[in-house]
Length: 263
Image 1 (cartoon, rainbow, N blue to C red):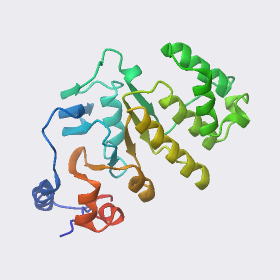
Image 2 (image 1 turned 180 degrees about the vertical axis):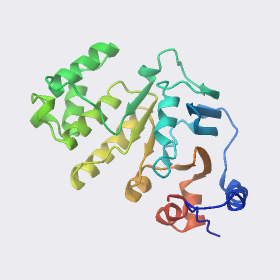
Image 3 (image 1 turned 120 degrees about the vertical axis):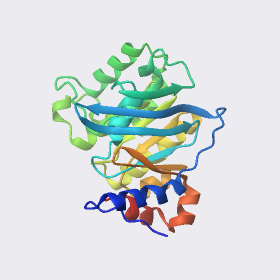
Image 4 (image 1 turned 90 degrees about the horizontal axis):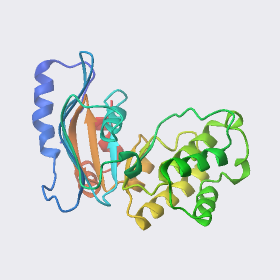
């Protein structure tokens, strides 16, 4: 059975959709593998409710794709989990040392303003000093080469293209080997070949360093590549939380799932 969420709907349709979609919320209550647990999370900006009693957990190594239409609250959810925004209600429990979240959580924003007079090398060195990272020159060189930054490592940020800045942005989110990394539309502006190479590197790097990945994306191939679990946010609420295998079993494909849930 398919459910099409329409932009113009009455209250009765809203209630019917809510009842049906609860059948697609599945979650193991076992705390052993949990990395972060979100319960009844609320976030408001003035009178506008952006997050409305959000409940779900992120498990160690279970790479998750967070889906939703524009304006559903995905970026606000990430920023709240990451400690950049203060919630108005609910709780976030971290199953790791959360005294310094910026050292445990890596986050790549859709856009970032880099200091125009600094080079990628300057910015990388700044991050290493800022977080007092214990990272070798060989590890840094491997990251620079993996993200294809070598050719413009000494070019001022003001001269970089959007795709070049994006690659640096993703590198910076990984450099401290966090417990979890949030990638928000990270492949925007990347060439097809470089995109595939970087996806492979991120996944291998995460698996080798026990980093859990949360990807926000509208790219079907990207979702298929990264996701072990899929969570859909609609109008500030979780309406689907399911493993990728069960999602494909129910909907036939990730593309079909998105046709039903992404307006």
